[in-house]
Length: 372
Image 1 (tube, one colour):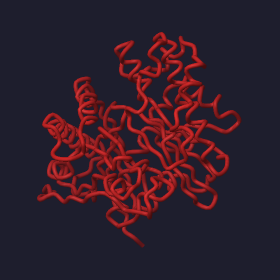
Image 2 (tube, rainbow, N blue to C red):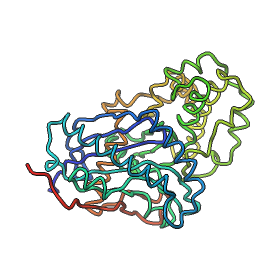
Image 3 (cartoon, rainbow, N blue to C red):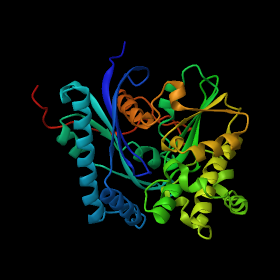
Image 4 (cartoon, rainbow, N blue to C red):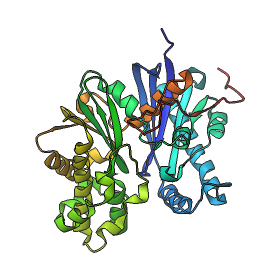
């Protein structure tokens, strides 16, 4: 039997809220145990730096060194992840030598697979030296260079979580929303459905000064503008067949520029739900259940809109399936790191569009190990 590894997964999503860190015991195929998990919020200053980094990276051609401000941001981001690892180890009463590998997603600044360009900042060597633990990072580059979308990468973990629930749709609502369909025979289909929390969060920040629409409070006071929704749903992305993925900035606040603060929040929230419902056209059969992960499930207005858009299909929270809804993606990168160590594929024809199942990630060993 393949040895079970103790892995840490790290995720910094397009919502820019902070770092999710989780421990998973796995051999890259089965899940042996779920370990402790921890969330480290970003300071307002770090959020502002990440927003600036996204803007600067959008101007980068992909050739040559990163602009100096992005290189500086990468160092700061990596050190923040090292601190998150150390805090998680303290929570779990574990020594670094008891961890086999860290799966480090980094933070996505730009994602343009049509140009074979994707950039997730975060230095694997620096994280390995800061923690004394082997690191797998840079999960997307090989897939994109081979002609894949480089996203989503979590579906193989969703399949492991789903078990015998097929046919099931696992929906992650982060800054961008994506769905994984697991069929009765194990068929795996995945793609980005459209905007997730990112436009809603940006709208809330602009109109309230808060980085999220907490509890959907702003959207609750507004009315959905159906004319705007109808116009936005004509975007060619929604009708395009998968595989497909999005950059965080593909859907921006310009979508609601002529609406009031309240109506804009309500309309952007409804758009996320309608886009998810539209995604059903690309699935081979109706899921028995939609299991919702990610930060979007905390927004009651979004969940209400989603249930209305999906009609009779069952919509449940990750916790109802026995999962940790805030940490599924962090767990997934622990799982992907274990798969990478074994040379197992992490992306597939019907998840990223890569021409053949491919492994991914770059493995870096530290030059030192902390004393026990």
